[in-house]
Length: 454
Image (tube, rainbow, N blue to C red; front, side):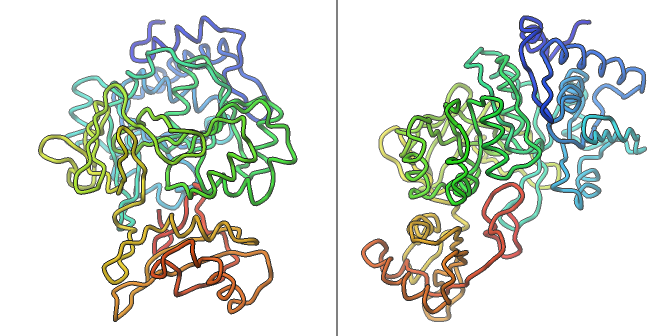
């Protein structure tokens, strides 16, 4: 059976029939199994008369059948809308935005729901993809207002970069199935005949145990999760010697967290990645494992700095938002909103422009303050934001989770002494709240927004 868009992947699968393709619930699934599963789903989609080019919500996590079905839907030129249980309450809204025509839900590893909605997709960008017989991908991101934006991609240019063979690695799928990083990890690993190692439990102990058991080589994750590994000392309880690389992105990395991780796992390459739902994942190279300076770009990407903010032009950029005006400049550049420093070919991400705290005309970047606070004994997590002040506009406020049992007054006094000489006076938090709840979302990103959105 001849495939089209994914034929290059099936060819690679067929050349490694006995190798592990996926590990799910402690079961191994070979590339031979995956080829057969993709072809079986192609037949089932024919039998169910799923229209070629249909807008389809694939509601699943990284199970073997979900992965095989995703590939079969790409081959069928469908507009894919991956949705996980993390957005359960928003699924009706997201389906409506994407004009979903078919709902496919995989529970565990079995097809649970096949439903046609009666909707006929008519959005001009969706119609354009259908007319071109190109598969599409819709990813939801949250803007500075917290409103979810539906970024529609043409899957053909997204797939292009995976045609060049690269390193084959045994990779943990930590980032979610409906996240640009999760999709990128999946396609990179499969296209290089690596092994996709799934995790149902994303706690530090469970992830480290999986690394040990299945000899994982690559862990793509977030700075927040790296901090959790350090706090819980999970790295001490498991054999992580197979691990070659940890990649991190999705939010700004506190420098102190990066340096601590480098000191406890000195043989692991720590690589900062950069990508957005709107443009895809850029190739990156960190200056060193304990440095926040990196080069980004690669084939198909251009970057420029305008007024201290990063802009990107990408061949794999989305067509646009389904529910929002275009964010691109007239000449096709995407304004990331990320403030950066530049040192020759290297850049350092300082933080989102929307998160900068203006204290009497002085700029404060939350990550810089968090990096200092996280060095204090007994601090488990910290989030820095701005609070309104009638005299100087904003002051720095801190939410912090501690394990020392100190009172607020005791912690404030210790914090004030600790920050002297490490932070300028205006950067030291003036409003401090002790919290006991997690300060991160299900996606292991800091909950900075007023309403707890990322």
